[in-house]
Image (cartoon, rainbow, N blue to C red; front, side):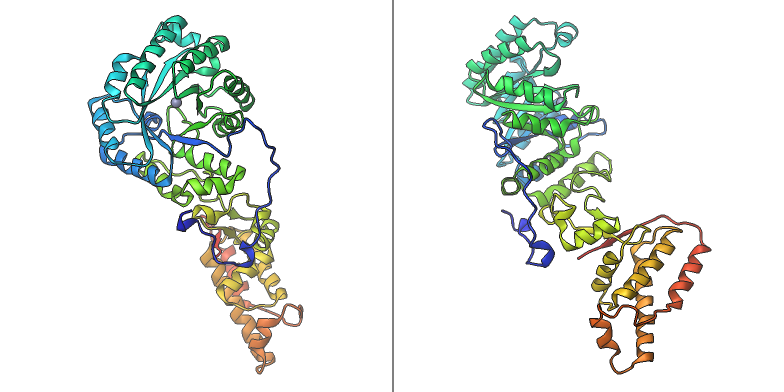
Length: 460
Ligand SMILES: [Zn+2]
């Protein structure tokens, strides 16, 4: 485990364990024994904004390797002269991850690809009736013969080889299974199922992979497009049915709206087996890798992105905030610290609760009684009914309220004021906290136009 993934020193909130999810063991399931084929440098190059120069490709490959993905898949060296040169350059980096390139199942392409220094070839050919009729125009007998010829050639070079259909879910099942049985016998390392158009649902995926698992003895790789939002769920269903390898890309970038995202798959698999996933991958590096790719393809990381979206660990409602502060696993299935992330409890809004406000007071080193915290919480809510407050505004309000309460305490009992402030959870109602400053702030706020909101308060 990487140092960055260590648990922080014991604090009350960190000692709680995430309760086990209801799990069932399945002899077929590979959810605790799978590999990632990271395709940002192949599928990701098909994203509309993507243009990776050599330097960027190398930076991404190194980052993915450091993260711990088992395979990195590159664009076909046949695509262009630069693609060929980049493929060779990445093969020479000496990465731990195996380097694959994705080529048409054709001898011309295979001959070029095996000379680049890659560890393996991912062969692909369309098998759906649509592709057979409108794309390459070949029948199944021809596809079988060609597949075996190319597989034998790649194996003769001592390289790994995968054979995949394209658009597997709209291919004839009998055709598909008989083709895969043939390539399995020919010694292919993996067969691939590709939902090229993003039409499959998890049940269809489970059924097809499970059926295939009974037909071939080699590994099974799966590739899911996300047109209908099923790419992560389909990957998980595939692993449950016995698939062994899942294709991902950083932020899911790819053709159209892309494929299973690396971060989203990690989130999903972490919930299945936290120790296994943390043992294989440096999860705290996800954010940097996503930022690297996002910057290069000129997009923002989405607000609701798995793990790294800006609100992924932000808690807002008062009831949630109270429970989270007592035990984070009440409303968090992912521990932010496992991903190098920080939890936020948002308090400058009308849904806030006094427990969250009290926590912020403690962070600021401001002692107030519970009754006083409730008073200042009421003021925050009153102001936030006009517009949400940002953290600086909340802190200012809390400090002014505290100063006012302290002054009142000193006026009433100069000798024990500070003692009183620190200890008193049990004397609600004994003090009045007129806080004229805070009230003035409310009035001043009412006269202003609403401004953009920044409602998050960092918890340590
Ligand atoms: Zn694809």
